[in-house]
Image 1 (cartoon, rainbow, N blue to C red):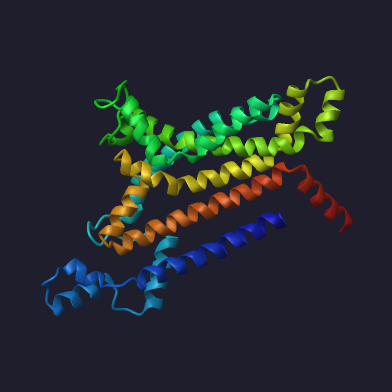
Image 2 (cartoon, rainbow, N blue to C red):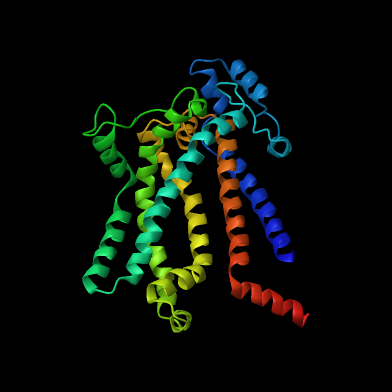
Length: 325
C-alpha cells in the first residue's frame, strides 16, 4: 500500500509539473493569437477586445489557476476557432486513435511474441540469422512506407487486391461498427508490423536471459522438453519485462500513429493536434497536449504497478522488509 501511495503521489506531482510546462510553453510562442484570429487588417481595438474575451489580458497566474480549476471538473475549455468543447473534440478523436493503437498492438503481439519465442528456440546458425534479419528489417521499415505499400496492395480502388478502405473514417463513427472496423485494418497493420518486429527483439532478449539458466534446467529435469521449459517457465519469468515493454510501447504508439492517421485521413488525435497547431488554436492545443501527457503518465503508473505485482523477486523483497520490520 505504501508503494502504491508513493506512486500515486508521484503521478499527481508529475501531472502538476506537466500542466505548468504545457501552459508556459504555449504562452511563450511568438505572435499574438488574438491578432491572428482578428485578421491582418483588424484595428487594435478589435484585437484588444478579442484578447479580453479570451481572457488573455489577465495575469498568467490567474489564467493558469482558472485552467487548473476547469481541469478538475473535466473541462478543457472551448476551441477559439470553432467554439466547440475541447473535451468533446478530444473524446471524438480518441475514439478513433485508441482503437487504432489497440488493434495495432494486438497485431504486434501476434507477430512479435511467437516469432521471438521461435527465435529463442532456434538451434541452427542460419535459422537464428534469418530471425535476426527479419527483426532488423521489420523494425527499420518507416511507418509511412509500410502504410503506402499496404494501400497499393489492399486499398480499395487503388490496390492490386482492393478489398479494404484506405481513406477516411465513417461519419457515423462507431455507430457503423463494421465500416469503422474495416477502416482501421490497414492503419493497424501498418503500425503493428513495425512494432511487432521490435517486440520480437525484446521477447528474444528477455527469453534469452532465462533460456540457459538453472530455471530451465530444473524444469527439464522434471520431465519437460526444452521447448516446454522455455515457453512455460522462461516466458513466465520474462513476463514482468514484457509487460513493461508492451505498456511503454502502447504509450509511444500515440506519437507513431500521427503519421498513419494523416496517411489514411483518419480524424484522430494526431491529425487533430497537427491541424490545431497550424490554426494556432491555443486552447485546443493546450488541452490536447495535457491529455496526451497524462495518458503517458497513466500508462507508466500502470506498468510500474503491474511490474511490481508480477515480479516474484520484488514480492519477496517486500515480504522480507515487512518481516524484518
